[in-house]
Image (tube, rainbow, N blue to C red; front, side, top):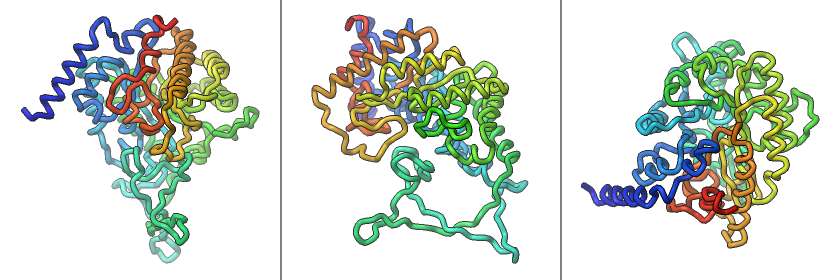
Length: 425
């Protein structure tokens, strides 16, 4: 046996021994409240020490990236199930249920669905009046760090959907371009045909282990106007421009047809703000009236230690949503120590701030306050999912210190703030 394997095994045994009945995990501390979940990669579940930590602390698992449409279904007829299967099989082996994330999202989406394909599954090229291929120039993207490769999510906050390919004189980034054929756009009906097959295939493959799905993710606008007209409250994604809000309704209907027993969630960040909670409320109420089986709302919970969210607005949003659904989840929970929040990430992840004693106490207090509110609504909040296992794994970067475990997968003081809430009273 290799030294690495022996050391990993020893570490695993030591961790499990240390965490006995007198040292409960998070899931044990909250067994009378709600599930405690975590977003993982395939690396987390195949590393013995990290896997032991997951099994000790959590009883719900979300695949961070590999079930997103663009990752699992990158081209017509092409499916990348390997990473998703690794995580799903880990859950099956250990009797842990999963949250499915996600079926429809404007970013990391299977954008080939917006292109017309022939009977052989090939994209249809647009021709000019002479019958020649029409060519267009497009940005040449590199890898997008932290999202499993491929093109960067279109319109990703703080990045503008583009990755610099070089430098102009004076230090300004120069965008590389490449010529590609121009393809014929899919009709709404063709898009729906592709989307329905996608939803049916993915949901059916994992329905034995997934208990709920984020069916549609982040479809609402970031505009800070609570009184905006209904049509102005949506993100102007390709799906919305092609279909209006009908694509949301249909996605929920098709997900329900594929698995009538699964909880079906609309999921979004900044869901506590007066504007976005109003947008979400009005959308869900309208589409439910039209037959969309929306059974839950996911509040992503990418918060900071300052006023995002305010406790009053957080609780107000919970009560608003409970007028429409009985099931709420905090789906992507982390609390960063800088002033960004929600979907914002300005790629200052390597800088962060100094984790002073004062900032540590602010973070502990924010975690304590939010968990106190969530425990108050334990009858309706079914799961709180931490977005990543440790600071090392976080999409926010280790130097933003957003989670309960540090870069070495050790418990931070804030861990005990969350776990030992009865003792801390």
